[in-house]
Length: 378
Image 1 (cartoon, helix red, strand yellow):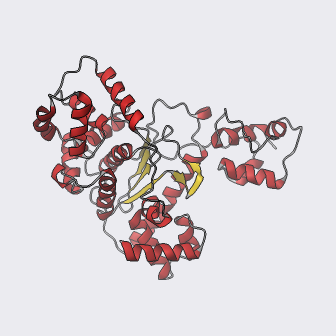
Image 2 (spheres, rainbow, N blue to C red):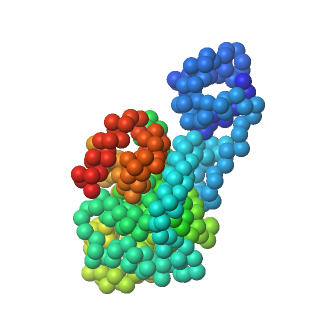
Image 3 (spheres, rainbow, N blue to C red):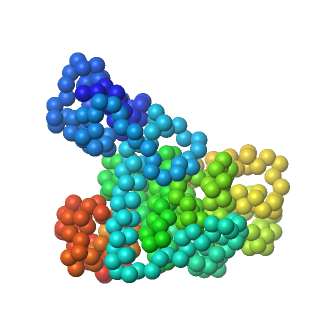
């Protein structure tokens, strides 16, 4: 067994600094002073998130991202994507492939917004997206969770697919790292898909949704770890960041409402505007700077201070819409995809086994109960 492959699996599964406490003989395996049993090796591969067959390769596989990588500022272990990232990417692409075939078989129309903004500027794109998504400022109601649901539902009503989860395949022992990536987009004329890493705050998720949707309107795939303040080096990523900011905080509206709160302390004013736009205060702050509506003596310091304030206030928020498994599934799989899979399985075109695999379910009982949940609650 190749020591290089063992070390590669460790790095993509846990990171090079991991102590691998569940495998105390790991170092001895690497030096060939001990040999893992079949059960130990199976468990090791499973925990690392790599295919078992890879453990018998002579050298590490060329494991590369299948879509453009726009991430910046994150030190990837050995320069490779993690097993968790590869797992959700591959699952998303499998789901997209399935839905594309489903759409073709059922004669569904192409999704008109895919690539429509390839030659547009950020402002024109943001205006069109707000119209298409029914997301004008006066249409935003409810709390931040309601805003997230609105954006996801609106895109699905246009024909898109959405996945919002904090873990790999419903496995809470494999959480996704928001520092590694926050989302990705897979444009397709019949099955455009966005993935949102829900291991971030709701504010972060809302910005990521807007950013990944911008990728769809532009017609360019990509994975990123975008933030409102990010001045990305890549022109596409920078364009998508600008569009996302303008979707959430329109310039004309901010120009009217900033003077109304200008007299308040910055944190209070930002909170007031964030409630209006149903987004994060950092997005509002960045918009004030971008639109040159306020002069900040030291913008970086102001931004850092707001980040620090938010970190003190924040509790850890994940993807669930509640503790109930069935409440979370419409986010983790996407409601449009869920309904398509369930309907196709009941008509016998897709096997229950395939449907369960696509939705990361282990039993037919869970599959049927989820179908009843969708039927009764959505």
